[in-house]
Image (cartoon, protein in one colour):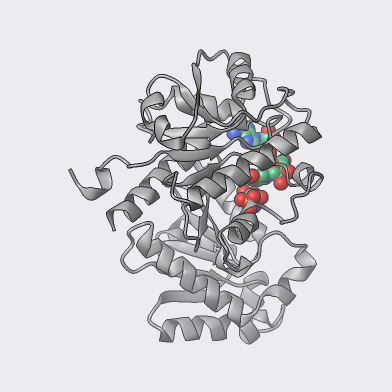
Length: 340
Ligand SMILES: NC(=O)c1ccc[n+]([C@@H]2O[C@H](COP(=O)([O-])OP(=O)(O)OC[C@H]3O[C@@H](n4cnc5c(N)ncnc54)[C@H](O)[C@@H]3O)[C@@H](O)[C@H]2O)c1
Ligand SMILES: N[C@H](C(=O)O)[C@H](O)COP(=O)(O)O
């Protein structure tokens, strides 16, 4: 048995996400599919009643068992969904409220804390609503920044990557208004995040020499300065420096041309300049299998690429594929770290 196929010594922690979203139903679906999908053992932090009702609404027959400590999940997972902690809320699919937001926040905080303490092999977060969490005291733009804070890292160190079967893409700037992107895009930011991506693809994905392709910001990568100068002023100097450091990196490439099927064969990851430049191609290609993974942290964290989907919650329509992919990827990354 290779080190990577050895079972994980600890379970994954799964945070519930907003209980009014599709998180609870796709978690229960993933548990039902655990054997077919060969998923590692996981426990959910809080929400036993929410999970039971979400499963029922989806027509799933699941057992739910409260556990007192994460290690109990390894055994319990075979026969029931292990749930740690007694936090709960009413199940009101599609109708988020403050008590649900409190539950989502507690689940995230506790799951992250336990993973950082080594009680779980990785953290898999179900989707939260940033708007609703902000109403109960969540101050960060998203879970990525929350986890940087929780792990005692700088915000710049936590790098969002979206990964699916067809593409890996990193937005170098993330949750900010489009008009702020140019100002936030500095040479230092590109250098810092590209180095983190390079190391993480080696360490967590086993890619010996990652091939990195960098997008321009402007149409046609600026068309030699006719449509903007960020390529000449900021992006090209950063790419040149990274190349001189020994990274296998090219660009800036026109952002549209970089996502054609032919171009995608030539790199392992695309560095995009802003959120939608990375997430539109990823979600267009791989929505039902896309994973949001945070690079650069001491813990492994993944999440499905979609949001709370309040419009379909509780209706039996939510596809659990991205959650299953997030659980699988977290298990593989944790196994790789366990082996090294
Ligand atoms: N990982 C996360 O925590 C995460 C990711 C993205 C968005 N969000 C949050 O979710 C909320 C809603 O965001 P949004 O509307 O932009 O995106 P969304 O992904 O929730 O929904 C977009 C569309 O895709 C559909 N959809 C989403 N997931 C699906 C699934 N598994 N199966 C079938 N259809 C699915 C929805 O019904 C909707 O029509 C926002 O508050 C946002 O901040 C959270
Ligand atoms: N930008 C992410 C997406 O659309 O998939 C999403 O908002 C999640 O971000 P956090 O993981 O930082 O919450």
